Length: 171
Image 1 (cartoon, rainbow, N blue to C red):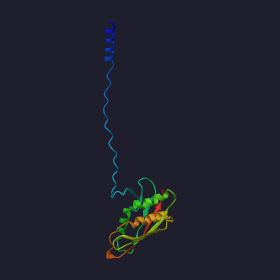
Image 2 (cartoon, rainbow, N blue to C red):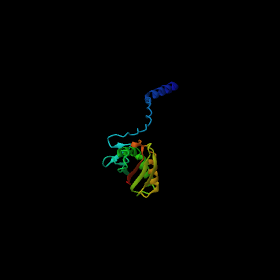
Image 3 (cartoon, rainbow, N blue to C red):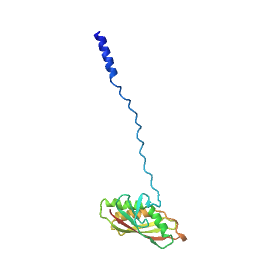
């Protein structure tokens, strides 16, 4: 009788405890997606840089930081200055990177750099040099960015000499 009583008590004890709730399976989080590269538009954003100031001439990072102000190019007018500006602005992030990289070692670096370059009759940049900032690393880097740009062919098939100023300011 003791054995049957013990078996009965064990059976009651087993029934008295609630069964654990089933654990719901959680869906894994979605994989991270890379942000889309912003496109130039009319909202003041161009190639991921936000325009500051007037007529989208000053570019800086979306967060407060160093700025690059693009000046007015001067040339012998065989190619519209607005076209030259548009092609240069296409690579403004590279020009800003030249400056920002040097800010790591020279935090107070600021000033105006002028790039002098020659657009050949086929639109390639035959030569480019920069001066005025007093920092050879930034000057060489910016000149190399300009040298890599391919412009439209100048009207009349000649070459164009261009002087293009950039003003750099740290944050």
